[in-house]
Length: 118
Image 1 (cartoon, rainbow, N blue to C red):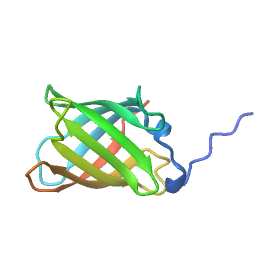
Image 2 (cartoon, one colour; image 1 turned 90 degrees about the vertical axis):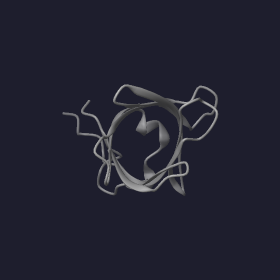
Image 3 (tube, one colour; image 1 turned 45 degrees about the horizontal axis):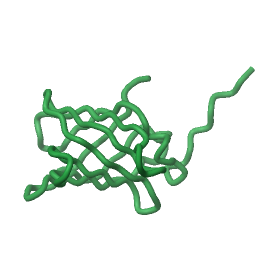
């Protein structure tokens, strides 16, 4: 009989374990978003992808390192439209990230990212 894979500690989660579909909620904002994170095609150990907010899509680039989770959002693929800074939640097995989302020139909001059911 196989045992279930161990749940990694938050500090042991690696970027490749974040690949997949995620749902985002923002404190104080009525709408969430859906994110798809994939391995970055140019930078090993980094992630890229797309965010969808009610049909409006933007590009993403993300890293997970000792300083936590960092994600940059860009509507044109060049300029940063928003920055996400957060941490993997301890005990979530790498399935939840919490932190602060700040649009360029805007007000920061707390966010919760939760992995979509597999």
